[in-house]
Length: 335
Ligand code: CP
Image (tube, rainbow, N blue to C red; front, side):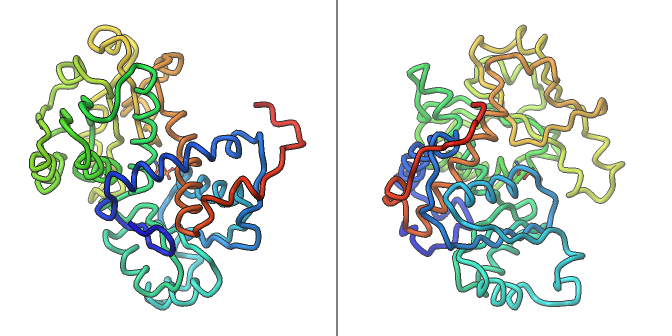
């Protein structure tokens, strides 16, 4: 794909070579993300960070990634402080905000809304999550994490064995990750959910069409016995009619150290897009896993900065100029 000037709206835009390019650029961002070097390659550029739905990681890591490349960030959060609450259309909002920004990142609760917004934008728009539809940058950072975690074991993404666990119906991160895995070979997926929260049929069909082996299960412990990755997800309460409806499913699949020790292979990597729901009624990944070296959830979140820096550098066509605008960090970093 041609990255320069492109919107990043869906995983469907990517071919395998594009993924390799993103990962190769993400690797080069490590000295900047680890505060060993500073680059000013995007000095003067402005990111419009538009988040109309709650976010911690995606919003702040997009902003940090842009700052780390030397750019400035302008943000709006929620509908109340936006003129959308006065009836302004997504098209008009995009038309206006794209006059103030060089690139826009957006999260919105409606599926398809970010693509609609992009139609009105004069600058590239990156999807930070549109309803239950897609979260393409999360899928990229998830796959980047999987590649890194498995690299030390002589494994690659091809031939991966992965269990996806939880609310697979509403979980946009697993939707995008499945679409991404369709680009690879011989993947074994175990999709663990209550039947009511099963992975959408169209995604299962795409996985099968890609030649992957897909197993559907409601049993957590059986499903995590022979996998490289156990990828847990939260019950997406915000997509249910009521809290009471979501409560029926919360806490159904709980992974803790005792279950991990009893059922998982010794090196099974534990992932979660976060936030994990740590309330007693849910606790899908217990805190007693925090000292488990195979708990990759915080490395996963850190990798989000690298991947988002790479996307900015590619979309704004500065990936080959980052080092030319670099200097050493002179402050105490504590890293
Ligand atoms: N993983 C993720 O999208 O987290 P936030 O909702 O905090 O952005």
